[in-house]
Amino acid sequence: MSKALVIDVARCSGCYNCQLACKDEHVGNDWTPYAKPQPQIGQFWIKVHENVCGTIPKVRIHYIPKLCNHCRKAPCLEACEHNAIYRRDDGFIIINPEKCTGCKACQEACEYDAIFYNEELKIAQKCTGCAHLLDHGYELPRCVEACPTDAMKYGEEEDLKDWIEGATVMIPETGCHPRVYYRNIPGKFIAGTVYDPIEKEVIIGAKCILNSGGKVWQVNTDEYGDFWFEDLPVGLFDLVISAPGFEYKGFYNLKTSKDLNLGDIPLERAK
Ligand code: SF4
Ligand code: SF4
Ligand code: SF4
Image 1 (cartoon, rainbow, N blue to C red):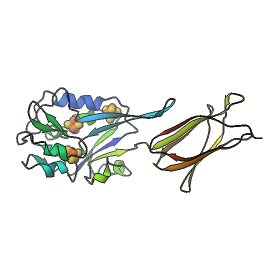
Image 2 (cartoon, rainbow, N blue to C red; image 1 turned 90 degrees about the vertical axis):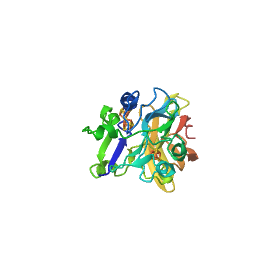
Image 3 (cartoon, protein in one colour; image 1 turned 180 degrees about the horizontal axis):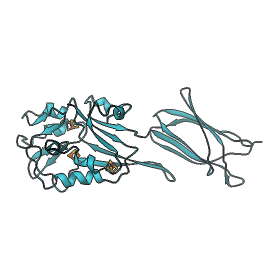
Image 4 (cartoon, helix red, strand yellow; image 1 turned 90 degrees about the horizontal axis):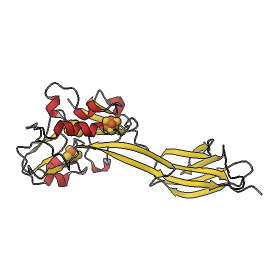
């Protein structure tokens, strides 16, 4: 029995239902021995992160819910000298609130900032995978059940293999091997608007050719003169824009460490 959670970023609408459902399940409710009550403020065992990419008017927004990754190699568990953290048979990592001394070693060890400190109870707390529900006949954690777009899938890892294939995990270089997978995290984009400065009109159908290390992408500007290259890897790119009757325009060594809006791009008339 090995459970996993897969989050499809393309399906997440940013409604925050998962975040609210977790609060509803855990704030003020004592689920000992799984968890003591989560405080009203200061803790988000699942938090929806809003990512605004690009600059106005070329902006894309996506949402990424983040929670404890229930790591296969869990530094929090290794750091706890009081045997307060354990791994269940289904893979979930639990902080036993009755054994936790509040020493914070786990919080310092976690690479994902997934552990919170409860000042009132003097213990560390985090997502429990809603194990208190799963052990009592419920099929899904509250956050998964609350998602209206089916962006979160929970189940046997084997049953989720189609969803996991091609998915990624947060900060894989930690070597923690998370059980929480993410699909469809958007890559970077390069966008702009091509126009004729004499006629003061956008140029429709301008050819935009992007090149990086011999790999080539091509799009034409749409009816608004806009072009978008989406889902690009991080790297260096050369872009050449051309249209009949105009001089070509080149942009070289564009860095996609962030999304790029090249703004309004005038093409001069061919001489
Ligand atoms: S994400 Fe952090 S708290 Fe969760 S299992 Fe991994 S190391 Fe532990
Ligand atoms: S699995 Fe349960 S505890 Fe974990 S984030 Fe979802 S609702 Fe919160
Ligand atoms: S409930 Fe679903 S759609 Fe809403 S923020 Fe969470 S994952 Fe996204």
